[in-house]
Image 1: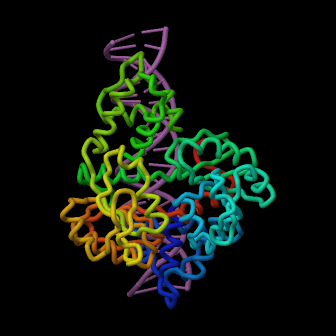
Image 2: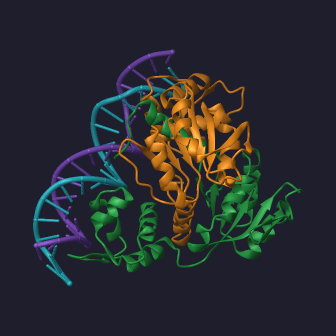
Image 3: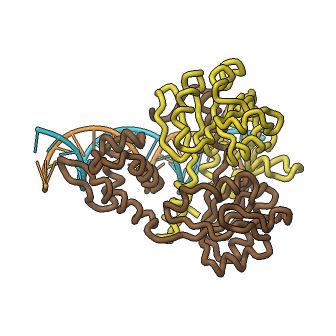
Length: 202
Length: 202
DNA sequence: CCTTGTGAAGTGGTTCACAGCT
DNA sequence: AGCTGTGAACCACTTCACAAGG
């Protein structure tokens, strides 16, 4: 349920003193209806208190638990252009249990350079690194031409989930789950709503 | 309909010689069922040819038209860190009718520097620039702390759609439509499926 | 004969409204 | 009294299956 992740972010942005929150208020922050929020949360179990609301800290923990964020997820990032560096520098990952265990690029001029506390590695070492460091997630931040080859290396070395920022549609074996993040597509959706001036819900 | 944008990308990745394509084949490329694809396309009108398939060039044009990509969409990008630069350099926008008409940062050390063929401008000039250059789309690539203030400037100067890459939930007036692109959320969804090893559809 | 376009049936997700707890 | 949890009604989207048409 991808909305859980949104609720988690809203909870984390609450002022530190807030101990309880009602479905109505949290729903407003997240931009959903209270009923939807309560139904979503009810799948986690009955963690609300009737007449009172949800205990923020407890709820936060339960969502993290449901999303699988109570353990550590090693990941590799391939492609150290501006985007790859932005991702590698982004501290939000670490707090959520994502740990960057390798950054790779096929440009030998970049190999050996430092990004955060990691040295950029050549693609030759990608498969071995994924296996040795137990990465199950791969992030692709290469140009589109390079993405398919990288996916195949990642799949071969046992990566099960891929986050693809390259603007291309990847072919993968059924065992690998890919999520695309496509800037052009996002802009196209904005253009669509501007064009017809409607916008969904809200 | 956000899937149209996916179909468009698939059409554009076809080899240049391909003049016709069946719903079955295009659906396979896009990772959807043929029935769904046909239903989606039927909203555009009846542009397929029974017994033959869709004429790729014509279909491509019709989707672009529906998405509002046959005109030009000026946009501004705020925040010239790694992410902002990655976005500004990304050529895919231009081909789709998106035109970057200004790039901004509040760091005076960056102001005046060049990104592609634009000079980085100070935030002081943001509102005037949006108005003068007719930007209706704003892209936020700032750190989360700065994002809310930027949104307010954008909204005040008449931007109607915002693409938010900052990992925070923005408050906006109802006239402004925001899409969030949140790397952490995307990773959390991957973690969720890994954790429970299930994946949706396919 | 082949593939689209589309009503009809099916499925999943959302909203309503209120019973159940604190 | 107040707010959650949840069956029941509702709605939108998806799939099916076939008629229509090149």
